[in-house]
Length: 511
Image 1 (cartoon, rainbow, N blue to C red):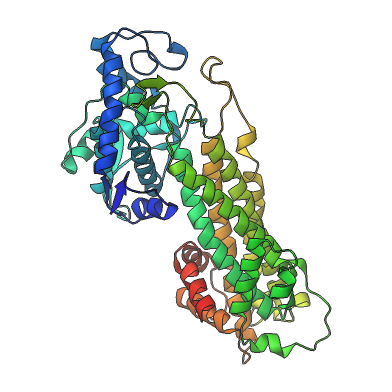
Image 2 (image 1 turned 60 degrees about the horizontal axis):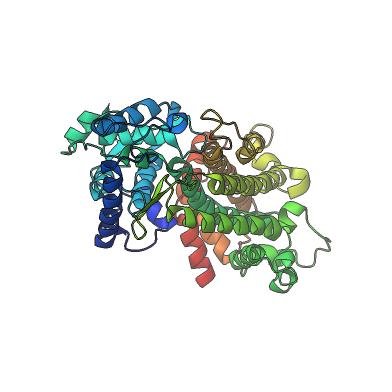
């Protein structure tokens, strides 16, 4: 049970709710904080002073004062007018992460919402009602307005939603009112400031970045395992991964990468078979794996630390401070911190894939590997894994275009009031795509390395690498002759992004 307001959220919590349907509730302490903040808003709404977001228009219309009897209509108008998103829809795990993260931000008691608003968001999660949210239309300041408006419309019985569990392929796409009814829920009536509070946050950007970051960590573990196995079957040296070598420039990621590579190759007959071969040094894609993959490990760690701040913070405007009875306009909705780390993440992950593609090239090139050309049983008659390198090259090239930083762009909006924006949703969307592409590349490397190991028999790889080989073959059986590579690659890429690579690394390091 994830109790909002009882403790800090983790990225694992986000995944547990978004993908695994973990239950969520609102802590009593958070409820009390929300009640105190709501009292401030109600006092403001009952007064005559104009306070942005409470009794005024929005954005460029901020100076338009709204009559008390029109406040409820103002909330509906805001959601309807701001639901301007276009393009393909967010996946259900992204939408569910948005629900959780918006509820968590509001539960901190500085937005002035009633507890009922957060409980309504939680009810959508618990009852598997997932708002349909177009991915395009937000510039990442003032918050992810359009995507969150689509999400919030479902609360009031409008918009569209999926009705069904996160992993239910048969979930129904329904109008918001029917989805609520199907789940036994009622629409909520929004009061002063609550419409703005629901949409003035970074939750699309953060959901995209958070899920990409978790997937990147899993991908990294699979990539290190693949690098170790490829180094073994290419008869590469593990001297660069020695602890005393890496200690001379002790980046944490390089140390972790080398430690894993040594563990995977422990007791390797392949490594022992060429100990005295006289070869001086290997290509960078083997020799520098601790440096490149290690830098990615460090980058992912930085991204994680920044996103943990974001998912536990308040992003709204204006902010309510019950202790001083103040309502303060500020800029906590600006998603620049998320944009920067999402851009950093995709660059780091792209390099993981770039290195893997170079090893695929070496595995399939008989002039380099000493293995059968393109890892075919009968080269010429069969084309083997020739196209694995082509596909990997295409994906790596695509990643390079996606890695153009979104965070350096800004187009003013709101008649010049919102004169700097983050473009964080673009960075987040691209980060997820880069991770997906990289997972396919690592999957292709694993397929090639596993096939190469079979050509090296009867020699055995390291204890950890043999375990990796077994896992690969459980997902993708040994081919007999030429077979399509597409489905095996898709299946193995799902394994790469699962929890299994992390579990495998933990077991190998512990053995």
